[in-house]
Length: 137
Image (cartoon, rainbow, N blue to C red):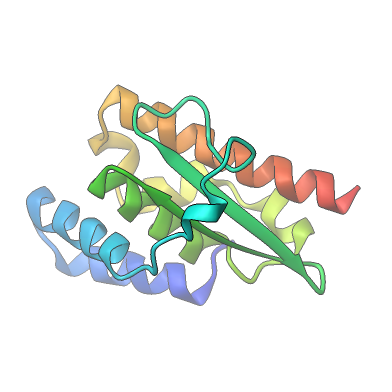
């Protein structure tokens, strides 16, 4: 299960032939995000397990997840943007049904991230799932 916004990323990746172009695309996705308000960069929003600084700020409205985020690393900012397109707007139950690793595998990210970046991606996914599970009750 993926949102239409994530399906657009999958389609865009199909047109990009080499990984430098794909990394550039991910970085551009991150640059297009609004920066996270400094007031939201607090221990409660910080994601542990990432080599870089990462903050995710989730909100639940009408049973649907939205989150913003930011990192001090350009590629991680891009990964946050990709995760936002994967999850934002889904119901809490849908968030918990998403196999994020499989979805990221569709664009090849699983095979092209360093071990540290892969661990950080996993930590971000786990945080999103924890928030959805806690809000769902």
